[in-house]
Each structure stands twice: as structure tokens, then as C-alpha cells.
Length: 420
Image 1 (cartoon, rainbow, N blue to C red):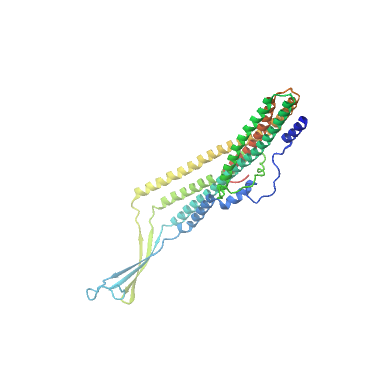
Image 2: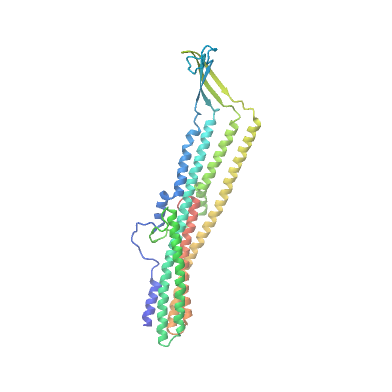
């Protein structure tokens, strides 16, 4: 019986697949893409900044439009030198002057205001792209943790069953006088410890499901499908090529570039304010029932407050310099973050390779040897339990390395603003 149990135990420990194939499920959760598809349209954060970007684009046209014209009516001598009561009828007063006038900004100001509004719209569009990149990155990272917790739960349940079978082996050996009763008690203690860990993992899985549902604007207790697989990892990444993509695609850099462009246009507008704005108009004059005179008018403001304008120009210069410095500093910081994320990805990749190809096979061989030694009385039960823990820890390390690579990949894609 002992040999049959040990053979079954080895089959469970060494031949159980990491996860079984699951049928297609309409619920989100089977893949990270199922979350991203819903979040792209359903995330309140994404919808908010997208609407703000659309609103900013609507401000471009009005920013460069002419001001509204205005109409002025003047009724003079409304009592006709005291010969009648006061009246507001244009045909009964002394004379009526009408003024239809149009304000005209100095040449080029309207175009600059339109360019400034366009730069602000570009910033709003960049914020929308940056928000989506952030939401997508958080979903990818949460999904990797969700996948890891699900696999760790399955592994822990398998190990609880394995420990139960080890306990059976210990009891059989104890009944045959080949082992102490303490061996079975140790197996029970080990199983109780894993039961406690299982409770914590289930709680963590529930929290992750709540967070993922919140990202999709779904009820926190809404059901999710079991995670089936992680995204395939890209081949070896070229840091230089990624840095070029970072500079070209990063949404935060796009925001700063648009802010820099807007600061340049604001500086030009500040210098253009040295010149006056105009108001042109036409003024017909009505006497009783006829219009018998026409006037035209030209009005302009006189830019005498040069001290004020010089201060505004210096302010625009400093804001432009600040925008350039902010963009440069951001580029350096993002480049450093990209380098760190690439290093972490490579470390996780190497950890997975070492664990899969060296640590896990060594742990399996150790367990086989310990199990055979325990059956022949050459190894004590504590050594057998320790060998079982080594396999469990190796498998958990493999799962963590795989999930860690997904999280590092999400960080890189967050920096690039696009999927690799």
C-alpha cells in the first residue's frame, strides 16, 4: 500500500499541469485583453479625460474668431428744445445716431490665440492618452497579480492534498511499527499551516477581483472568469530603440511638448501686444424719418503702459524657459525609469529560467530521493516535509517570476504609451 501511495503521490506532485485548459467564458478575466476592451470604453477616468480633450478641441475655433460687433444707438434732443415731452421714438427726437462697430485685433494676434488654444487641446489629448496608459498599466499589473494568486491557490490546494497523502504514508508506517506517530502529527501541522495560508490567498484574490471590477466600473462583487494565460513576452528588447520610442510616444512628454509650444506662442503674443488693437465702425445719422448723414470711425488703444508690457514679456520668457526645463527633466527621469524597468524585466526573466531549468528539477529530484529514503527508513519525516516545501517554494517562485515579468512589461508599456 505504501508503494502505491507513493507512486500516486509522485504522479500528483510531478505530473500535475500548472493549470487546466478552460472553455471560453463570456465574463471578463480569462485574459488581460478582456479587461482592457471593457476599460477602453467603460472606465470613468478614461471617459472623463476623453471628454475634456474633446471640449478643449472645441475651443480652438472661438479662440481665433473675431470679437462680436456691437451696435450703439444715441437719441439726441429727446424733448426737441422743450417743444414736446420726452420720447424715445427715433423719428420724433432731434436726431438719432447709430454706430455699428467691429473690434479688430492687431495682425497676427488671432492666429497666435488660435495656436495657443490648439496647444492646450494637444495637452488635453496628451492627458487623455496618459490616463489610458496609466489605467491600462494598472489593469495589466492587477491581472498579473490575479493570475498569480489564482495559480498559487491551486498550487496550495494541491500541496494540501499532497500533505494529506504524506500523512497517510506516515500512518501506514506507524501502524507497521516503522515510524513514530510524531510523523503523522507533523504532516497535520504542515497541512494546518497551509490551510491558514489558503485563507489569506483567498482574501487577496477577493481584493484583486474587487479592484479589477472597480477599474471597469462594475460592482465589486461582480463575477470574473478564471485567468487562463498571461500575455506572451516580447523577444529581447533593445534599450536604444525603446528610448527612441519613449521620446516619440510617451504621453507625458507629448503634454510637455505641447505646453512648450503654447509657451512659445504666448511669448510671441506678449510681444505682439506692443501694438494697438482697432475698432472700425460706420455711423448713420437719422433726422426724423430720413438718414441724411453717414460717418465712419476708427478707434485704437494707445499702448502707453510699456513697463507693464515689458513685465508681461519677461514673464512669458521665464514661463517658456521653465517649460523647456520641465520637458528636459521629464525626459531624463523617464529614461531612468525605462532603464530600471528593463533591468527588472531581465532579472525576472533570468529568475524564471533558473527556477524552471535548475531549481525546480533539483527540488523534484530531492523530493523523490527523500520519499524513497523515508520508505526505506533512511530519511526522517522532517526531511521529507522539507523536500516537499522546496518543490512548493520553487513552483511559487516560478509563478512569481512569470507574474513579475508581466508587471515589468506593463511598466515599460506605460512609459512608451503603447503596447510592445
